Length: 165
Image (tube, rainbow, N blue to C red):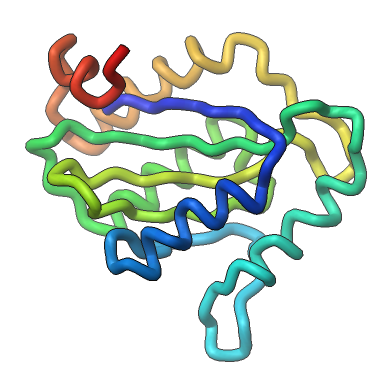
C-alpha cells in the first residue's frame, strides 16, 4: 500500500477533479466525515465545498490548507468498499486528520482500484495541524494498515508504476 500526500490551496479543484470521475462513472463517493449531504443523502460539490468553508475561513494564513491524498493498495489486492472506508478512517485518524471534514472517493478509472481523500490540514479553531514528518509518518501507517488488512506488500517496481518519476 502506497500513499501520496498532495497539499495545495484549491479545494474546488480537488473536489471537481474527483467529481468529474464520479460523473463519468470512473469513481464513486464511498464515505465522508463531517461533510454535508442533500436531503436524499447524496453528496454534491456545492455542499461539500460549504462543509470545508468554516474551517478554511478560520485560518487564511496557511498557504496550502488542502490535502488531496491517494492511497493505493497493491494491484492484486481485492478490497471491499467497507475495507477501503476502514483504511481511510484509520489513516486519517492516525495522521491526525480524523476530526477534519473529509470525503473519500474510490477511483476505478484504471485497473488498480484506489482511493482519494480530500480534506484540510487546519482545524475548526483555525490552528494548522502539525504536518512535520507527514511522509515518514504516512509510510509507517500504510505499513500498519497492510498488516491489519492482509494486503500484498508493494515492491519497488509497483511503487514506480503507481508514482512514475
